[in-house]
Image (cartoon, rainbow, N blue to C red):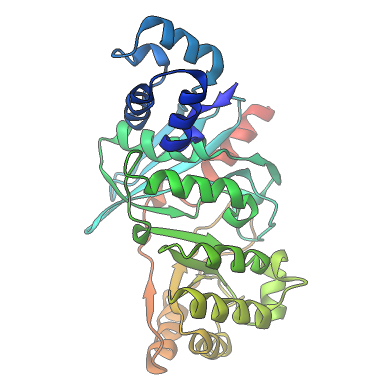
Length: 344
């Protein structure tokens, strides 16, 4: 059966024409899908025979809330969604002054092996479909009652390792008849799969490319992020420069502050050089400790000293506000607990 929610409205209209179904029915179906209906029977303005036919020819799944946690501190909401095949992924809704941001997963599991991340424990299970990513947004909005204004692809998985499905998802959420969200309100995070940067740049999307750098030198970065091996920080910087030159969009560096690993003054000075090399904004992230990881967040003293070096050197730097610390809000933690409970 065909995944109807992964189809663009114009693709559905063309397919309906080929099947002899009036074109206006495709528009009606698209409107229902954008509302997050869970079955074709809910599409009440369609004839019964068409609803039956659609159910025979197309699949339409909704995610199931396996767990929902709401932070008592800041209102952050974390969902563990059950997918059609029994797998589960996490989505986080975060409240900011400018609106509500949803952080979505793009893969079930992850194969990148970053040493400080819970998402990669257990490896990659499978790629997520565009419809599943769209459902993370739609049903997070419907369940929370919070209007989603921004999307970050920073949950479980490496978006550029699921490139075509992620690109289709972006087309869906940007489509005026689906979610109608400007891609200027979207950030895509990557560990640095630079072979995909030209493909992304060629599409000339208005999103923000956030590079998970986490270390400015090969020795440290390769220990933390296996994806650096065979690529290297110099090559990554070159790819970032080319991306910016092609798109005119500034790249952001994500940098998790890890105690005694990447938070020394020498690391800060090297990061200054890297940021200036590509004109990047630096977003420092206080590390959320993962139970299975030996890494711990930097002390406040080290964080302040690190920031001062960057600011004194003229680097644009921000510190990500820690949200949802009381609900396992960092990537992969809730899913990992769920998987461990199923293993018992």
